[in-house]
Amino acid sequence: MATHTFKELTHQRAFMRMWFARLFGTTGNQMLMVAVGWQMYELTGSAWDLGLVGLYQFLPALLLTLVAGHVADRVHRGRIIAACLVTQAMVALILVSATQGWGASRGWASRELLLGVSVMLGVARAFQMPAQQALTPMLVPPLMLPRAMAFSSAGMQAAVIGGPALGGVIFVAGATAVYGTCTALFVMGCVLVLGVKYEHVPPPREPVSVRSLLAGAEFVWQRKALLGAVSLDLFAVLLGGATALLPIFAKDILHVGPWGLGLLRAAPAVGALLMSVVLTRWPLSRRVGHTMLASIALYGVCMVVFGLSTHFVLSLIVLAISGGADMVSVVVRQTLVQLETPNEMRGRVSAVNSVFIGASNQLGEFESGATAALMGPLGSVVAGGVGTLLVAALWFKWFPALAHRDRMVGSPD
Image (cartoon, one colour):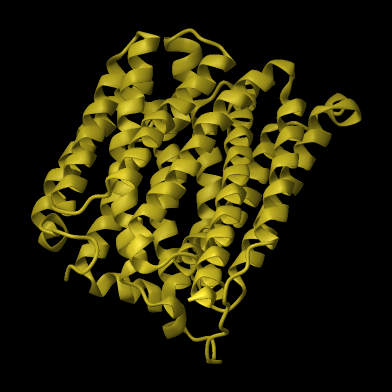
């Protein structure tokens, strides 16, 4: 009994260290992206270039997905995450050098540099996300996983709230101050991750082959509820996301400065944080499929209203509601993926899931920038919201295993 209690306490400590590491890392990443986005728009004034920032982050994640998943199933996952945080700290240091002193006088903070560091961030993301997602189930028992996922999401959303808001405030003192703060946060996250202890059992040695690399994709393809969940998030956020266009809305439509951009970036996370707290206290137990599809439809409605809004407060409110709706989808998807995947394959399956997430976010930013260049920012966001509503309706018909899923734990496809 004493041994069992000690083991539970050890897992709790490891989970909380990981929780704080993700908090610091996500805060730093969000601050970094607010500063890079604002700086890019100040340099070029181009919606296309804002979209390219997202695309340059997504492409490495897409190209390295199979390798990253394979690595996450064979190497200590905590060390992978630590290495990715170090990489992001290096990016922040590069930007510090480019925006102060001799680097600033030489004009190093250029469009090309910002796109180059976006590639580095994409590489780090490619390896960090599968390892991070696959590590959490090793730190909590299966029955507690839905609550743990919601609690982890609460921490990440707190960081997504604090990061952009803090980044916008610090940006008043200059981009260098933001990048320096990001460096410190990434270093603290790395130190915490290196202290996470869990039982790492090396998998049986097997040669790297095309089949072993594709095992995660095959696993998801054969389980239609999982396929429907991850692809639903991909297409809904890909069409309905407006993150890349927020600098345009802040500056040209809502007429607010960097502080307003920070609040707009944080607003979806406020709603997501509140929803994750609710789901931690009262986890979804029935009709999870219907609930997920309804939340995606609500997300689409919010995007339509945001695109049409010219009032800052209304824009903040609908963005917050969209974040809460999206959080329901996130918790359902991540819990299903982790509960129904054996540990020896979680890295590869999480890598597939991270590609869908990356496509919905980074590729979604490129899609927003490209369509805004053709249709204007308002037309891009409204059309995307309508597209999200259509996706929710189609997925109800095309993926009945997901739509009629009743329970997350113990429910068959």
